[in-house]
Structure formats: structure tokens, C-alpha cells
Image 1: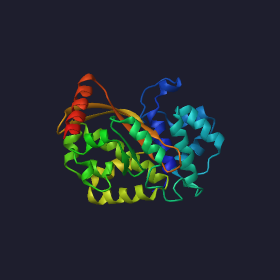
Image 2: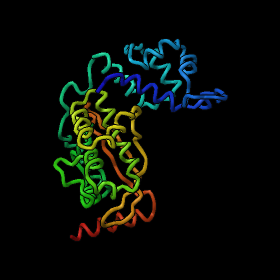
Image 3: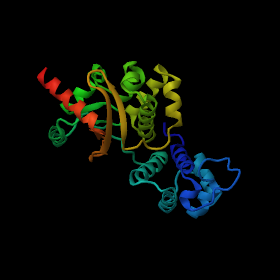
Image 4: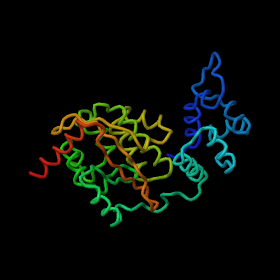
Length: 277
């Protein structure tokens, strides 16, 4: 799963940067989305030949100075810079963040944190998307949709294999893209569980998953919004924040917050009904 992950990441980010982003004129007859290789190479102070080798995977050991220059031009966020560094280590056969199997449980302090977040829908998942712990508020949100029918509940498997997911997420395409990209990022870094799940979904789901997984190169956004069609609460517009927890296991805490007044009212009513039941 790590084959030329560095090259795909660099190319995807290069194609996402417009000439205007770096002060260049767009010019006529541009066949390449984003920056041309030559433009990025000049701005980063490296040769076009060397950048080509990096993108094609024939050179996987760029120096820290080269990585820093490329990251500066591409405008990488801190988490993307960290991912870039780890891709280089994984591709060069160096130490991997997942050389030791990651923990399948969360620390007691994280459980206390989840308790403090009640009744906010929040959960902790590992790199392959298994939900390891959650608030009661999240269970009230996700259980009626069917996420907790599986053991362990897994977001990516639910999104791609459970027919109810397409009803739960009116913007299913966006949600599917994000979960495929998250699996790809973890698999590229050598996470065995993510790679195994990706192989499973490539077989059981086929092209609907495979094309997303193959095309994914950039990290999924750590913040954004989702629309849910909840079987009990109706339409919900939820903003989410996804935070990486310390400890090296790639556990992430995701919290959902109402994005509008109607969703606030609907979530409050859902909590009240569930509590009464």
C-alpha cells in the first residue's frame, strides 16, 4: 500500500495549487491542473528532473531541506507536513508509526474527556475507522442509523457496505470520499488494519470504493460539515472537528456540533427522547 505514496501526495498537492496562489499568471493553454512541474521546481529551488523522480517514485529519500521547500511552496498545513515526513520514512523503509500494533482501547483520561463532553456526539476511532469509545450522545445519534449493528462499529465499512448509509448521509459522495481518503492515508503509512480493510472493501464493494481509494492522495479535512437524515430526529446539519490524540496510535477524537438552530433543537429533542426511553 506504500508504493509511491510520496509521489502521489506531492502530485496531488501540486495540482491543487493554482498559479495565482503563488503569484504566477495563469497563462493560456494550460493542460495541467494547478502548477506545472517546472513551476513548482523553480519556486522550490530544485531541478525539474529531481521533482519528476520524486513524483514517479524513483527517488524516495529527499532531504529535509527539499521537503521543507516543497511544503512551503505548496502551502501545506502542519498536519500535511507531518504526513509528508512520515510518508518519506515509510517509503524509505525507516521507522513506521505502526511498527507496533496500535492499541485497541483508549486511555482512562480519554474516557473521562468523553464523559465531560456529554451530551455532545463524540467518538474516538482508530486509523481504520473502528469506533473504540464514544459518548452517549454519539450513540443516540448513530445507533438508529445502524452504525452500532456491527461489532466493532466501523465508519468506513458502514458507509460503503450498509444500504442505510446512503439514506443517512444525503451527501453520501462527500462522506465516502473522506472515509476512503482516511483509509488511504493510514494504509500508505503502513497501518496493517487499514490496508486489510481497504483490501476487503475493494473486493466486497468493488469500483465504488476502489476508485476513491486509488484516487485519494491528500489527507481528508479535519474539520467540515455533514448532513444527516436521521430516522428519528430528521434532517441534521452537523459541523465536525477531528483531533489526533497523543500517544502514537493514530486515535482521533471527532466531535459533532450543530451547525444551525434547527439542528440544535433536533439534537436536544433526541437526547430528551432517548433519556426518557
